[in-house]
Amino acid sequence: MDVDMENEASGALRRDLTCPVCQNIFSDPVLLPCTHSFCRECLQRSWLFNKKCPFCRELFTEDQAIANRDLKNACDTFVKQTNWTSPPKPSEFSCTLHLKPLELYCELDERLVCVDCATLHSTHRLLSIKDGVPLCKSELNGKVEYFEKKIDLYGKMRQTLFKTVEYIKKQAGAAENQIKEEFERLHNFLQAEENMRLKTLATEVKEKISNVQEKIFETEEHLKSLKDHLDTLKNELDNEDLPLLMNFQNVKIKTYWAQRVSKVEKDCLLVMSKHVGSLSFNIWKSMKDCVHYYPVVLDPNTASPWLALSPDMISMKESLEPLPVPDNPDRFDPCVFVLGAEGYTSGKHKWEVSVGDNPKWILGVCKESVVRKKMFRVSTTGGVWAIRLSKGMYTALTQERTQLPVNSCPEKICVRLNMDKGEVSFYDGLAEKHLVSFTFKLEKGEKMYPLFGPGLQNTPMTIVPGKVKIHTS
Figure (cartoon, rainbow, N blue to C red):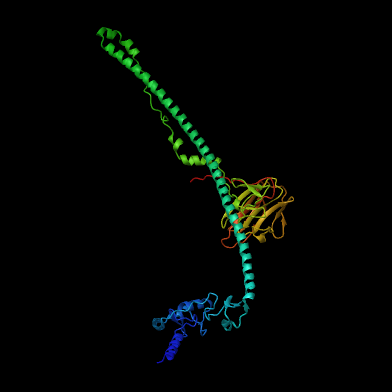
């Protein structure tokens, strides 16, 4: 075989062993279901952009590409026998499929293609690089604006979260001081109670011991006198017969003893039951005069920034300046409301509120999902069942406002909530006169909360303490 024929055969073999994508001898070749082979790396790069065979455009999945061992062995043998050296890799700005410069931009696929790729994008809009750059920059500039706004929002949220942490620390400090003050008050009461009981015990001990010591003194005097009588008798017994008989009557008179032996009195011991019997219960029972029970306490996390709450969470009034509180989701703003801390899903509940001479207020109940972050019409249709005093008129806040026939101005309003019947009633707390009742229906599991709107007044609205009763059985 001459040299030309040998070179022609070698060239034909090289073409059969050349990857259609990189135009180089196959490296780790894989076979597709369509029987076309490609370098594994070339196929993986192509598959990122198009899930079709780079040669015949038939669809395939990545796991369908299997190693072509026979072709790999043939390529390894060809490289060894011909001392084949791979040509330099194409530029990163060249088409990996056709090895031609990337000169066009596909608007639909959003990638660069060469002129030979144009047939694969015949239904797409192809732009020159000069026209494609402004299009991409415009979109990226939009992204820049979007991320700048997002960064601004995240920055503001970061500051809000930092302020929230500081507010939580402030809350913790206030709660700690309140707890310490309350325990100090209870400690003082218990200390005074302890001192009083110890003093009572010491007084009785002194009295009982004094009584017994008087008996001891009396007994010792009698014992001394008896010993003297005994000595006298013994001396007389030692006398001669005649003197003994002569002094018998006198001795008998002198040694006459009519005193009785002292007895232990039945009440001489301490009454232990009075001092230590049911001691802890009796102390607890006496504490009811120094502790107060409130059927409702306020939730400061729901309070409008314009409301100042007392440290014990049972009184509220206007704040002359908006308080620096977090804008948490539960807080009413701009409406000047605050909720009770506990929501109800069942049972009967009752609380009284001292409204004093406030000229404007709202009292009632609301469902948990009531609007918090915008002004709204307070009515039963909005999930609020309440009454209001405004401009001297008492009104039931139904959809169509209903004026209440109130003759006097109640200084205390009683609210009675019956969750089982779905009813809330309002009374003049002092006259015990019924004002109005509402019925309601809630979704299963939804809570009903006490609602307080003291208005922007300097006079505080205060929750009245409930009566404490101790029952034993």
